[in-house]
Image (cartoon, rainbow, N blue to C red):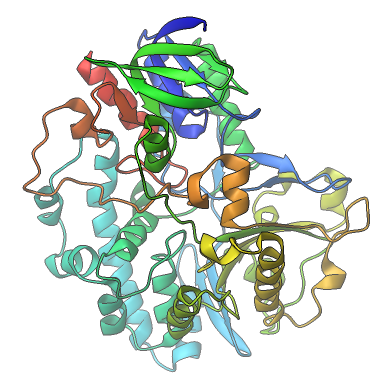
Length: 514
């Protein structure tokens, strides 16, 4: 067995690993990134999925909110993150609820038409103002050592803090809103990527909600021009310029901590590499497996469907497709339906109708399509099916994948004024351009344990007031219990989504300890 040594080894070449590698290499560290797959970027990737159709889709992650401007500027990433003109649209019978990105007259009129008066709109704007206050307090701390809860609590309205942080989110939703559609629009941000319900006493829904609301101080989710692959391409560029050693097709099979600090990493090809510091860009449960420690794997809960269309279908409500699909199109996400779908999934049933979110990347950024397809009116759709935990697919992966696809497409068809099938693009074999990925498929493609897009339940992005911390890793939220092994991915405190925070904060912990 050939043995080698590096100052820092980063396991996993996803976006967080590349962020950490660049910061550390620029600070003078010798850094090696080991990536099991043949491609870098993990879930932050683009690919031409359908043979003969020149559309580079953001196959897994598809929007950016939590990536701080600080990281973009410090690393010198040449990225354009473009705003969508519509925040969301929720079809309801022959009408619906339209919420603009810059909320104005159309949003106000839409609330009034849906609910009959201005009470829900006033409650909505009041909640939005409170959440902006919370976001402004929390967001700047994400790239600093973890604050204490009390530091943040004192900066915001105490009732809002209690409602978001201390009590199940369902209480806030039910106390502030009466309309089922409005309640559902609020709750859905607490459920994306998290299998839970409005009144879960664990508050995992509250933590998910908070992360959806705080990105860059306003919670706006933006479209990466060129697709998610452009984010990875830029991170690879700056890492290579910093002289990071990057090895692909290099799976790690085990980690053995050393007596004082650091560890030896064993590779599938029989080689090993020891390092003073190991940064792990994978799920905490995956780390436990590599250490040979029993663990409970996380359970992903979403089905991702990528679609290419010849043209956008007409919506039954009569709203222009270029408006209805431009933001997040909510389907089957009324408050009562979300609760019911959770119960169905908990009883081992694929929810029908399936709660879904859909958006059209190409209405904001057409560059992911070949010019000929753009000129012909082609578009892409990203569909995110909720409440579909991995256990639903275990007994019959292929059959249950097909059933989940049918349930999701029926949710879409239910709001259309015409059949979806004639609008679908066809690949070279004449097959509809529809790609379906269940949590099991995501795990198989990415090595993301359980297909859980956050690598596990999200943590509050602060320290409890009575928590004691003694090491840089603990202060930055990247500790693992092993002094030379740090989390640097979505499994870190303040990890999750396309943020780079896990990588940034792990690098800062290493540099603080130098």
